[in-house]
Image (cartoon, one colour):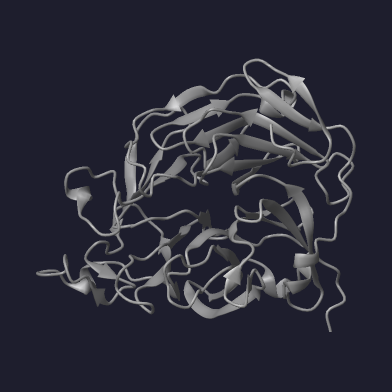
Amino acid sequence: MKKHYLTCCLILAIPLMAVTCNRPMKKEKNPLLSSIKLPAGFEIAVYAKVDNARSMALGDKGTVFVGNRDGKKVYALVDADVDGVAEKVYTVADNLDTPNGVAFRKGTLYIAGISQIWKLDNIEDKLENPPAPVPFFTKLPDKSHHGWKYIAFGPDDKLYIPIGAPCNICNDAEKDARFASISRVNADGSNFEVFADGVRNSVGFDWHPQTKELWFTENGRDMMGDDQPADELNRAPAPGMHFGYPYFHQGTIPDPDFAKGKNASDYIPPVANLHPHGAALGMKFYTGSMFPEAYKNQIILAEHGSWNRSKPIGYQLSLVKLNGNKLAEYATFASGWLKNGKAWGRPVDVLQLKDGSLLVSDDFANLVYRITYNGQAE
């Protein structure tokens, strides 16, 4: 086991091993955090050290569950003394296939791998001795390209599951309608259905707190140049909508291979075009009371950062302000993970805690951050 956390004891569990720190993690001042720029009044600190921290979900008792893309584990973070630092880090699942996505419902943790979803019942009462994951839904494609998933339960109590296109650009949805979609199943795993079509790859979504409509980020295709197409922020108020992939990108740009004979007006355009190749991933509508009122019901999203752009872009958190269902402003909220053209961190997901603070996962720096507001902005 890597000596990645503080001095830890190993607590043997069946069928896997739980990791529990034997003394509280101190509030560390990571020197790299001094490079993070936030609006006045906001602060950022390390909440926990987690290998390849990806998607996050919040348990009823305040446990933060963290998925993993490059490894096989799922972690649980506990801030027992409520000081803003998780002093305990447990491994609650191991030996899973790319368990990137996590969701929580009525005491049960759901974990999404490439081709199936598992569940762990009553997990917050069993962190030190977690049970073996039980298969929940096994009828997903086994393609690893864009196969890692973000999952969440919607206001309709259905589990939403994005299934990315198994390629950069292709039309595999003609052969298998599950590809390039956001699908959903009932809470008991029944009634699988495609909710939104023409979605190349979404790794983050949320529901508007007032309208209960689904909003999601989408990664645009590669190999069309540095500046096109843009990543997208989309709105899906009803099932059956098609968002253009693989025929059109960012609403208006025809694909050189697939747009022939198609009309852009037949597809749903994005609410906002985001940074091209910025890799927009996790997003949340902010509903807490800690941040200023101007942030209420607005979107904070993570841009993981470009991988093949000649000049890197992204590596930040962005704020999307809405006027109704239309874009009012798209601006940087937190930046500094990219220094002199090189990244030391890559934001993946955002999660609002019960106190209104915001967690941010980083799979490159192997950290989870906590952003707070001290109420002293000028």
